[in-house]
Image 1 (cartoon, rainbow, N blue to C red):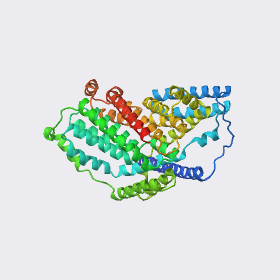
Image 2 (image 1 turned 135 degrees about the vertical axis):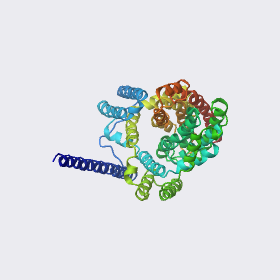
Image 3 (image 1 turned 90 degrees about the horizontal axis):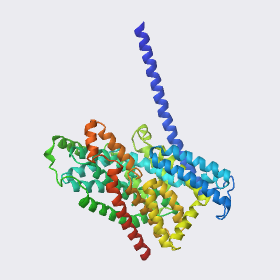
Image 4 (image 1 turned 135 degrees about the horizontal axis):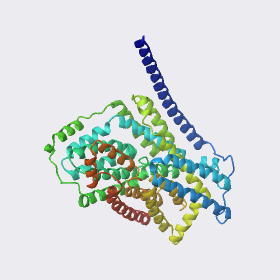
Length: 509
C-alpha cells in the first residue's frame, strides 16, 4: 500500500513538473511573438503615420528660470544614474528603469517632459534592428560555423604566439562585421581560454586583443554594434558609407594594435612546439574535428544576411523593419528547435536601450544638452571643426566610464546640432570613432568586456584557490587593472590616429 502511494506521489510530481515546463515553454513563446508583433507594428506606425503628443509639450527658452530648474533636475537625475551605472553595471536595467521613471515624473511636474513625448523619443528602428540582428546572430551561432572556422585557422597557426594573436584578432574582427560583438565573443572566448590554458600561456593579452578587434569590427559596418546602428537609423546613413569611411580607419587601428602587441606585450615565447603536451595535441584534434551542425540553417542565414546587406544599400525601406522581417523568416524556417533559440534571446538589452532613449530624451527636452554644447562651443571659439573634435574627445572619455551605447545616445544630439547637411559629413564618423576609441580603454564598459571577464572567471573557478591566487599575482587573470595596462595606451593611440583621420576628412571634403 505504501509503495503504491509513493508511486502515485512520484507520478503526480512528474506530471506537475511536465505541466510547469510546458507552461514555461509556452510563456517564452508568447513573449517572443508578442515582442516581434509590438516591434513590427510600432515600426509601421512610426514610419507611415504621424505621431502627435497626447499632452502638448512646451519647449522652455534657455534664459527662462523654469528652464534653469529643468536643467538642474535633469542633471541631478543623470549624475545619479551615471554613478549608479559606474558602480554596478550588472544592475543596469533596474537603474535605468528608475532613472527613466524619475525623469518622466519630475519632467511632468516641472513642465519640461511628459510620457507621450518620452514615447516619441524612443527610436524604434534602432531597437528593431538590434533585436533582429541578435536573432540572426543566435541562429548562426547554433550552426557552430564560427567554431569550425576558428578551429581550422588556429590549428594552422597555433605554433607561433604572435601569429595566434593575429588569427584570433582577425577572426574576431571579421565575425563582428556581420554579427554583433557579443555573439562574436561568446564564440571566441571558450576556444581562446582552452587553447591558452593548454599552451600554458597568459590568456589576458589574447582576450584583450579579441575584445578590441571585435569592437573595431563592429565599428566598421552599420550593423556591427549599437552606436553605428543608432547613427544609421537616426541620420539615415547608407550601409556602404560605413564601409567606405569607417572600415579603412578601423583596419588601420587594428594594425596599430597588432604592432603594439608585437613590440610591447609579452605573449610568452615566440614559438611553441605542439608536441610539448599530449593534452594540447588532444585539444587541437578536438577543435579540428568540429563540424557544422545544421547546414540548412547556415545556408539560409548567409543568404538572408547577404540579402539584408543588399537591401541596406539599395532599398529605401527602414533597416530596422526589414531586419525584423528577415530575422523572423529565418527563425521560422531555419530548422532549429524554437525553444532552443527563444531561450537564448536576451530581452534585457532591448529594454535597457529603450529606456535609455527615454532618459536622454528628458535631458534633451530640459535644454541641458544645448547648454553643454554652448560650453563646448565657447571652448572651441565657435569653430565648428574644433567643436567636432572636442565632442569626439569628450565622447571617448565618456565612453571609457559609461559604455558606448549610453555615450552615443548622449552625444548624438550634440553632433546633430552641428548642422550636418550630408550623410558623408565628417562629424558622423568622428562620433563613431570617438566612441570606439573609448570602448578600448576600459574593460567593464567596453561592449564585450563584462562578458569576457565573466567567462574567464568561470573558466578558472575549477582550479584550486592556490593556483588561482598564483595566476592573479602573476597578472594572468583578466581584470580591470590587467586590461587597462594594454587597453588605455591603445585607447590613446586609436584616438590620435582617428583624430588625424577626421582632420584629413575635413580637409579633403
